[in-house]
Image 1: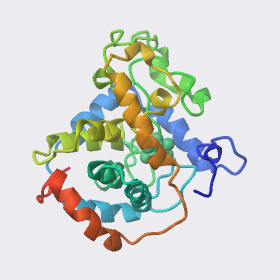
Image 2: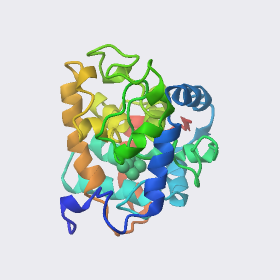
Image 3: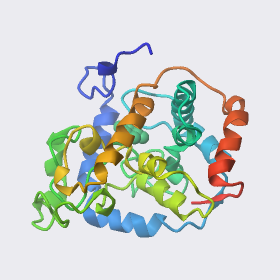
Length: 272
Ligand code: INS
C-alpha cells in the first residue's frame, strides 16, 4: 500500500474539505435519540425489492461526503476492500462482506434531504456513528460539535449510562442512524442470508469508530463484545487502508463474486 497508515482519517489536515466538517456538525446536531427511532420506523419496511448487483450499480452515483480519504463513487471503495481481502486469501464470506459492507448507502434512493439520507444531505446516511441516548464521548471526530446535540441538555440522555444498563451489550444500544444499521437489518430480514455472525457484526459496527478505535463505551460492553471488537478491527484494515485511486469495473469482478454472493445470499432479490 502506498499511503502510510497515519495519513488516513486525519480530520485536521489543512486541505480537509469544509464539507467533511460540515457533515459532522449536522450529524452531531440532528442525530438524537428521537430521530433514530423515527428513521427506524420510516426505513425498516423491507418492501422494496432490488437485487444485489443493481444496488451495487446505484453506488456509482454516490460519493460519501464524510470520507476524508476517498472521492470516488462508493462502489469503488467496496470493490477495493473486497479485492484486498481476496488477495489475502481471507474466507469467501469475508470477501463478500468487503464487497457489500456499505450497500446500505442505497438508502439515498429512498431518502430525503430533510432526513439527511440523500445525495446532498448525508448526515443520516454516512459517517462514524455514536450511541444515542447516552453522553457523547470525546473520541467522536470533531468532539467540539458534541455540545450541539440537543440530547446533551436532556438529563435522560446526557449521562454515562443514559437510557442503558451497565454491561447491556453492544446489540442493545441504539446507534446514530445510517447505512450500517440499515443494511444489517435488511440482511437480517433476508431469509436466504447465511453470512456468519462475524460478517454480520462487520456490517453493523464498522462505522462505530468511537468504540472500536477510540476505546469509548466500555461501560456497555458485555463479555461477548470482546470477540466482536476483534472481528471489527480485523475487518477495519480492509475497510480503511485499501482506499486508493485505483478504479475497477464492476462487470470485471462480478464473475468472481457472483457465486459467493449466491452462496450466502441466494439468488432472489433483497427487500430494502
Ligand atoms: C466514512 C464512511 C464509512 C464509514 C466510516 C466513515 O466516512 O462514511 O462508510 O464506515 O465510519 O468514517
